[in-house]
Amino acid sequence: MNLKRPNSNEAVGTVTRSKDVVPMSGMCSRCVDGCKGACDIWLASFRGREVLYPGPFGEVTAGADKDYPIDYSHLNIQGYAVGANGLPEGVSANPDTAVFDDVNTEVEYGWDIKIKMKVPIFTGALGSTDIARINWEHFAVGAAISGITLVCGENVCGVDPQLTLGSDKKVASSPEMDRRINTYKKFHQGYGEILVQLNVEDTRLGTAEYVASKHNLETIELKWGQGAKCIGGEIKVKDLARAQELKKRGYIVLPDPTRSDVQASFKAGAIKEFERHSRLGFVSKEGFLEEVDRLRGIGFKRVTLKTGAYSMKELAMAIRWSSEAKIDLLTIDGAPGGTGMSPWPMMNEWGIPTFYIQSLAYQMACDLQKKGMRVPDLAIAGGFADEANAFKALAMGAPYFKAVCMGRGLMIPGMVGKNIEKWLKAGELPKSISKYGSTVPEIFVAYEELKEKFGSKMDQIPLGALGIYTYSQKFKTGMSQIMAGSRNFSFKSVSRRDLMALTPEAAEVSGIPYVMEAYRDEAWDILLQ
Image (cartoon, rainbow, N blue to C red):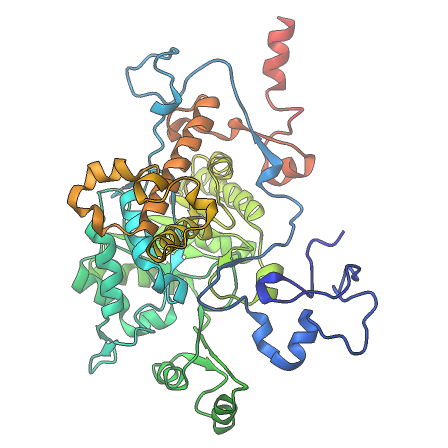
């Protein structure tokens, strides 16, 4: 059985003519001379490298759809008829105290100085892509009022059209970075935080120094990689002068906008856009520990790390070195991940999938703890979009995993709310929404709740932010129900015993007991006592 659908996908705008395709290649079983398209091979014959990327850039996010042998659907959550764990100290368990609406879904992370979040989720890295830039106000305010952490991704300063560099070639002024940080801070309610990522170019530009000195940020994040790709961050630009500017700033820009033949192709209309690429990082233990010390010396109270779906060796490096460096949160991003721009073949075909890499990370954390070393707080990312799978991940990784990083799952509510705002103003509300009402208070069930809290500031909250908040409340309620059903009234009591594996293969990979073995000894003790 082929685990993917090669040679055509909506993400890259391609489709096969025939419903019958060769499993390995994805080519039509009968390829006809004169076919008018449009499979991957057909389109690549005249558009070349454009077919590597989901598009149109800036208007879509994409997630690979390879069907891995095992994922979190191969686990189920245990439910119990007795008990109530994790209740507040001094509260006895009974039907009046063990109510799902009273479940505490808060979590915290950090080595010494803890950050609390209202729910155990935070955003993926929203960096230099147009999706992040255009929707930032919705995402940032939504995260702030929801009480979760917001990650400002890589290259924001580097691609800022208004970037000003000092005589030392370091960031002197970045209005775009200022906008991003200030937007979140304006509505921050004491839960969650904004943290800025650093890649190779960010480090060279002095982004850390800039956000520390101007904005007094307490946390910075080092980035080794992500689940969607194993190369550096990418965006597309449609303007030749802009492409040349980014190349001058030190980025890799392809096709090379300084070449005369490329310029001629652009003017002729053949080349319609340029790719801006970041460089590959090279990590070493000594360099990593020195960089963490340098960042703390700048003034950051917390340093976090984001790593990608690399080999087991790099995973061990990330966990061990993070322990030695006292990293405040290590986010492990499994394949395939979501993206604003990543090569589609790479998204589907590289890296350790989320379920597998979390299972490995748990094994490593256990062994590191047995060695007498403290395991840093961990988070898992890569394809999460609902509270059931988030609970499974936190239970499977307990007690080390504190939160789930969600990319597209938290972006979609922001874009939905933004579009509702646009449709309302244009008088073009679709029937899928107008059936709930024709005004903001009628459409958004959380509107009056927020209005009571924010009063006159409610007009400053964009509807995309209201969408994220409304989604987070649904997530919180759903998580509360799951936790109450498993008799966990806070995350401190959630454990791997709250899960069962539905297949022997899932049990073997994760170490979670197979459904026909979970609680067997206890059950037979009751049966035969």
